[in-house]
Length: 238
Ligand SMILES: [Fe+2]
Image (tube, rainbow, N blue to C red; front, side, top):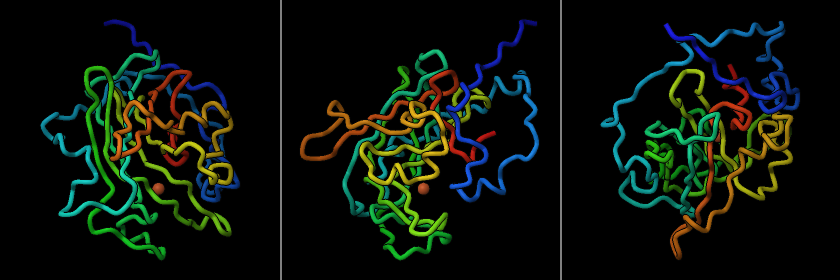
């Protein structure tokens, strides 16, 4: 039997703090005892396999899931999924979900005073191609209030979920938009101590994928594990 080599661990400060009092729900969620480091065994180095026929080619376009087009600014979100050595991760599942342009989710738990959009569900998925590329067509999500503290507002963001090739490469994160004035005030964004790591969650305006007179492009590369890993969302941290 060949030796099992585990994935590299993230560098200190590049993942969210378990306890970040400004992010109120971390106070009850954070571990109170020292963590036990588990070795990576075959269980962590393998993972679920998804049948390709389950993902339809149209699943990547969130603007065409209903009879009409959703209200909002149409955007293209694309990028590459890379492994801990910077190599592309081909044929891997990328799932996204997001609020509509008014900052409202079509979920009964979201009751804030903003309209839902009958032409926008806000969920999509895609497989990366052989070079690790993925691409979504959607609308720019709106900012929305939350009850973390008085007058708290989330910056515009798109939730991402990836499995990659193994359970240890599982990543749940949020993509932000460049220049968003709410970012400095957002505890969810700022609970990642390392500024460079934090900024890996911000997409860049991308003229290469911008379609004239149709949609602005935003590029968002995602790194699964390794020193440049995209930060895991705080509540998704293992
Ligand atoms: Fe959200």
